Amino acid sequence: MRLFLDAHVSGRRIADALRQVGHDVRAADEERTLDGWSDEDLLALATSEGRIMVTFNVHDFPLIVRRWSEAGRHHAGCAILVGIDHSEFGAILRVLNATLTTRPRQEDWHNYTCFVSRHA
Image (cartoon, rainbow, N blue to C red; front, side, top):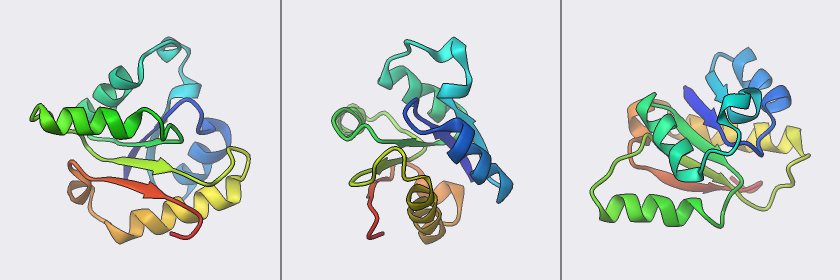
């Protein structure tokens, strides 16, 4: 799966683990050139590369994807992590992998947004 991890999702811990199981992962916190980019610009970058956005930002991303939908703008998918602390790397990996297996084809994520919790 092609994924884009938002800045608050650890590239060092989460991206590396996801890469080890075969995912193609780009992580904002691994690329200093992305520092200061807006959430909308990061989603546009992820979309342009056909990557599912993975984020903890429950405040902004639901609004952004809804605005995009209302404007007829598409995205490559958005998985919003909720109810899990940023430091719970094992839980993050477990629920993210479980969620990705429910939609195993990249195209299944086109314009799909979901909330991912430890009960996923």
